[in-house]
Amino acid sequence: MKNRIVQLDFLKCVFILHVIMIHLVYLGQTYPWLKEFFLLYTTPVFFVISGFLAHVDKPFSEFCQKVKWWLVPYIVMEGLYIILASILPINEHIDRLDRLVFLRKLAMEPLGPYWYIHNLIISYVAYYAVSWLYRNKIKIGALLLTVAFIGIFVVWLDIISWHCCIFFTIGVGIKLLRVPFLSVFRPSLFAIIVTIVGITSWQSSYPALVRSLWLTYVMTVFWLTVYRFMPQLFRKGAFVIGKNTLPILLFSPAFTIITKFFVPLFTFDPTVILFTITAVAFTVCGCLLTAKAMDYLRISPYFCGKDHFFCRK
Image (cartoon, rainbow, N blue to C red):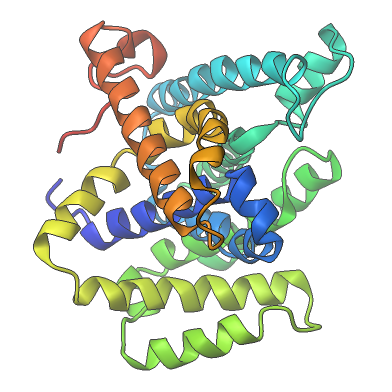
């Protein structure tokens, strides 16, 4: 893609690794505060990026196709997760699964990491609807307010996170105001100092949304600053992961469950660092190989609407 912002691929790489770590039970049990810290900014960053990259200047038929190929993998993977949650002794275990519970979880209360796709679809549909209403007379202020209003209405139905709507709208606003993403989140060495302040104050008495907004900005700027000093080899590896965040998000639960069997091998390391590195690497490789296998078996066109689920370019 000619105008692709490669730094966004790097950010997606960094934060999808955060997502994997959030779902490592052993890590969460050892450092319970770490999951809470990651949750304050990891998903918000993804929603800001998703809002910034959302394209609504397309015919209705193309829009429907895009939503369809988000829905298909969501329904398949979330459906499987719900069924497994009724069988396996996981944190989100369902004691009694029937048709009504299944549909409620699928449509309103998604389990696992798939709630992100669920919320993203709703946000994208709302954004497209509003942009269509204002297609001939777009007023940025009115557009953003309407998106926010729809977000509030949807929140009342209890099927989307209000925080997600806010961060998605922030991304949309950056795009509509035609402000370069890297100008809003400007990398600088000063960001390292600000990041230290942000990390040390994340448990302050301020509301969760305020802390989330602060950390989202601080951590994004921090990692963009780190990107400046990364060797090209590391950048290339990060780009591969960043371009394949969807298959990693979809398939990671299967591999993070398997990593539970790794725990006895790492009891000698009280820091859990070696376990985390191994588990994250195993999960990423497993997800990417699964996507490649789907391409090889020609399943991808029926699962995501593309010949290649594994993104090479």
